[in-house]
Image (tube, rainbow, N blue to C red; front, side):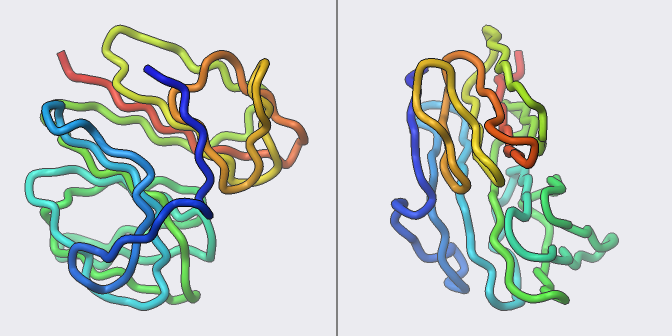
Length: 184
């Protein structure tokens, strides 16, 4: 796995599958591998989510005051920095009771892959590697993180497959950590 740095502000925007907005595609699986995709979306208006038949989704609001995922079997509340897991097959309307948000999305084949998405304010992040690990991403939400022997992640900077420990630069640093593993 190759260490790759990125910044949200340099990623090209693409139209949503349903045409209702734009997203920034951070990374996705190769065509022969089980499907996964990471993206950042600006949600400025309420409306239906795109359907991703047979896939799982984990959405994390990274800016704004949260959103409501209205669905038939009960609403999900996606508060700031609180990952929400749901089926990509479900009919969902995104409601914005407190205004626009920005979210980080993981869409993946849950039958072949397992995913862990969390927000942490740990002083030190030591990413564990395993034989089933497909990809790890660390995305700085607030403050800054220094990667041992490498560059500093500022808000909206990220690194895929970091090598070594990341250390928080201040006590106000928070990061989104995503790990995708194959199911054996």
